[in-house]
Image (cartoon, rainbow, N blue to C red; front, side, top):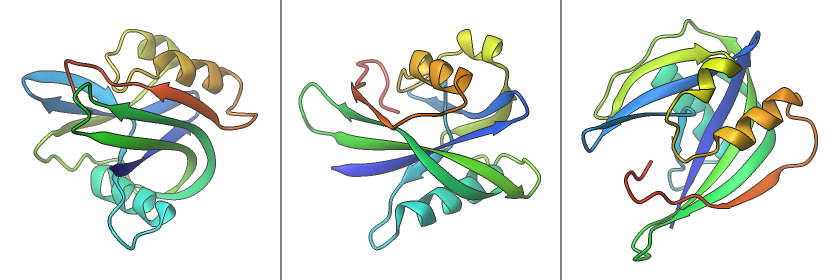
Length: 148
């Protein structure tokens, strides 16, 4: 089992997403990544944001938790989604094996994007409410076509 931390960064009225290209498919995700052994969740969020987007952040509140468990149970990922505030840095994508682009999107633009795991509806609802309220468990979000 692995734990992944994702960062919800809203700037003005737009949210930051990063574009991945994997298995001949292109899709968007919230920036973040896998927790390394001995690393706190906060350290992971800060490291991944710096590596992927060149932004330094302050981690705020837990918004969602979900899981991706493959049908054959060979992979199980727990995803923790936190809101954050940008402290410094200029947005610059660090292109790698799968990372291709980082960009801010309006709520209307997000509607038309392919996002993995598919938390688009939950994300937009929480976003519209200013991410107020308690963290929510979103269940298993495994999708056969892509493992995010």
